[in-house]
Length: 433
Image 1 (cartoon, rainbow, N blue to C red):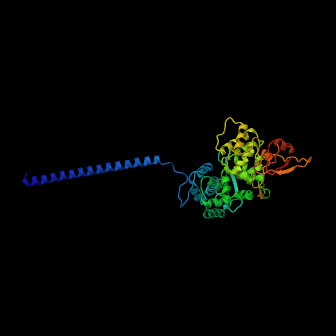
Image 2: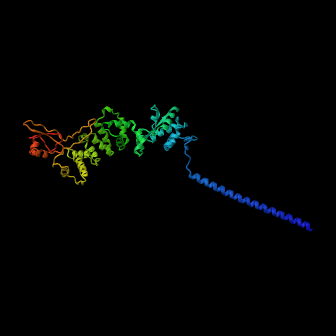
Image 3: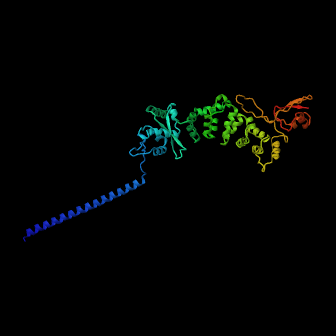
């Protein structure tokens, strides 16, 4: 073979080897790229699988403050299931759903359920929003025993829903009276919230009840929040006539708050009519009242003294004596001994032993603002057998003091006035033998 042919053959071999090497490199690169792509794809699949596992199943409602909530009607959903989902929504989400007319079941729309839930769960005042128009509602049971039902609004027109939307835009506190009350008791203290509550019929009716004693709005609000709302609602539902408001009615209303340990009610009872509280309340109510008079004032001290020295049962007197020890910063003695308590009272309040103080209590009796004296005993009979001097008992008097002043014996003074005991009161007319 010539040199030239050998050289050409060597060149062809070299070119073939070069082509084989390039093919091998391309194949290897393709395999590497394919492997990397497969790894990336597998990693992506694993990531989305894990994410799908951790993500809760999609709800029938999707949140968007611009478009509102949409009920997924692509699948059949029962009214019970829809109600459960609506009751889980917050106020703003339900307001957004008021624009949705999509049917749910039985002719009800999403906006019907939204309005019903707002009224039931959030005390939205639908009646006021609809300007008092009559509306049709059906009771929907929320439990198997039908003990709790939710009124469902039905058949409202587009015009009525426009009223609801307008009310929501213009009313800062779009709630019922009980809704306003609940927000105040929960701690909301905005001035505008209280002013809105002051304009409710319930508050204005109670304001009329306590009008004769000029009770400030804040004090009346404090009283109301120291008891449950149903006490107010029951009073309003009884449809009381303003012209029949009287002290017994006021006391009856206040006594209901004693069970809720209302300090304001206890204080008001004594301001309204302490004589009624002293003589007409049952023993259990008096004990409940005394338990709320821990703060000493001239009025409370006088009232408690009358109870301690009056004719109530022993357990009432014991509670009254406990309070008097408390007022004097003295330790109450156990076991209770009434005679020892009387000795303490006589010494502490500068009284003669076994004598009742002539104490004045100054209640506000409706339109009357003159002072009144608590009557502890009947007026003594006046004897006309022989002429006597007449003496009117003054504040701070007791029989021994009066007898000493007129230089007579106590027994003579008691005999002349037919007194069986040593109890006297301010304003009593005594005959001086």
